[in-house]
Image (cartoon, rainbow, N blue to C red):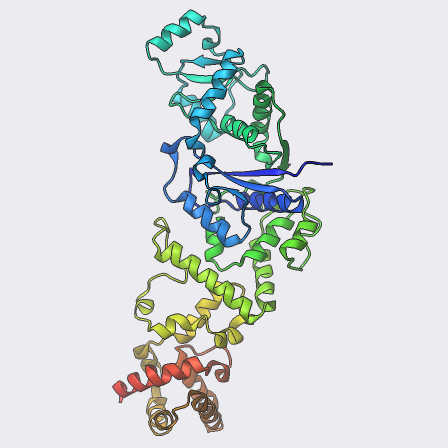
Length: 489
């Protein structure tokens, strides 16, 4: 009988905006753990606090909360929350490193690596020929003298192979490296499976060596192909900034279509048009994946299908989730200086919106009109906003020769109707009747077009009869025509 898996997903907080590939790996870890009744642990790779980016962890957690696939143990979950931050465990890593030194599998290195060689390796992926560290041959007396003098040192592991040089376990600043801290934690937390992208192959080989020299069994490493761009190159946030997870969320993509798209990308189900629930995805989930390019249009299509087929109640829940995420990340000030192009960008129009307008877009009346006309929640918001924005001066300057006729009609018919009708439902019915009567007049098309423009500021859009919702009637009665048309008389 196979043991219940303990799956770890670790995340670095050295940069903002979770990469789409990292989110896919998290989803894989979640589905694998749940499918096999295991435990998903969330661990934070922050061994060197000086390199951490403020706000990064909060951004990542908010994305995971938004996606709705909750981890079982780790940060924000366990009573011993600090236990899952690697920066709080450097003393533990030091003990394990010293043990390797005692076993003659690691040694103190007092050398300072050339900054030039570091940059060449980091920026241009230049690999230098394997070299031997001269500190490897220091005598015990020489090491003792250097330690007594207070010389800075790192602890390096002996590689015992030609694939890579001896590598650092503990840096000279006392912080453990990613590979070493991960191995120690995987051992202590009894992690059984590590699921990550194929770009970690080099790290996997180093970690297998660390486990071997620690004389413990390593977890099962599962490597998954990377998401690539249209040129079959690794998908990069540097070259395509629109593909960060935060951008996708703010663009109005819903969680379930995104989970479906990322889970099935590169599998035999990737061309299916169905949107599966999480339990169904567990059955279809597989590691038999091929390299596949990220197709944003296909994701948009899935999202559109999802929005068109869900109930109004579910649609409103998605809207609220979208609204809350926007409020937190844009109005809440965590946009980190990015251009504010989402629903909460503070334009002059929005600053002056009345309370009813702020709430109108999450009313079911508007869902009925727009739900099947949009691909994303952002499009829905922009459509509703466009219909409800009211720029009187712009409207007045565009109604031309019909202005006086419209004013007369509004004054003699509509205003009288509003004064007499106290019941909003009744007012709604009578207003529809007035529009129908107006549509039978000589200038039917022009009058209705101008009426739409007067109501919404737009000359095209959904049926005018659909547009005359209770929400707009309330606006007409309390703000728009009653106030602005009187000013224009």
